[in-house]
Image (cartoon, rainbow, N blue to C red; front, side):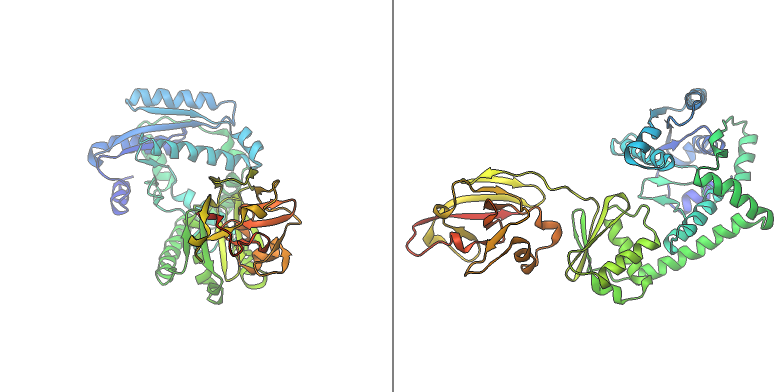
Length: 443
């Protein structure tokens, strides 16, 4: 594994002074990576610790944990041990055990980084893992972004020093350095997608094409170069970014699919939601932008929602249920979740201006309450004309994702004030009235 140090330096995977946490399962790959980084910690000027996660999938999981702890003690390496219940997590979230284990594992890694216990997490993915990942992405319908495979570094946290190292080189390194390791019996369980690809598909491919792993990795390298060039030609200044929401103009869909698909991925990346997005999802999003009417939405994996809002698509990384609100009318400030702080105050009518909303509180029924919209709500426009509240908000081009979070002052289904939007004709401030209420929203 002489080339590993060169790979680390060429890809700037490690900075001097960093604490590198190595994800260690006890298998030959992770035990070899742990040994290699520990043996080269002075050359790299780093500290090395081990991270072992028991996924509670196998009866022998506790034995593997004991093995890792023992070997780390012998080497003088500090180890952090965690246990997650992947089968329980899979059942609760309706996930495969593979996905649940991965989510739990990365949750532990992220927590260690956030607490400044480690600076980066080193993973033992190697050349064969890369080839399997590329094939799996292609079979799931990925484009160039998926066909390029795993990156040497992801999110500036996860590093893969062995990504260009072959499995045979790892076995040779383990033998030369007397590195002990354990075998995970589930590696031979072909009910798992990755194991099936490794034990059945790749095994047959390698019989026919012995250099398939190297060929697939070379293909990924070429794809990555092409992908980077196309990305460098993208113009994404029209993306509107606001916290966990990104808006993308529908006009992008008149471009080549090579352009709009990458912009979609960039929009999703900006809200931290690229995982499990495949080619079929890109086509669904295109259909939404080009053919569907305003207000329609589609759900993507992991609670990602894409809504059509007039000339834009709005990407949200979670669907948020409407909170509860039921408050009497009085001069105060209250918080409307996902909308803003609503302030009601009494003012002199001669101070009214066109920048704020004003209403005659004397005309509001005593039983009126601030709440969120309900089916059957109606609203009398300023100047006359009654409409369904939903239709009025559509006329005002209020995005569908916002409508359920706008506080309205209503009695039964009669709406008198739409906070931040409009005042009903029924509570208009007439000439000669000395005081009124002003309602403002700080979003």
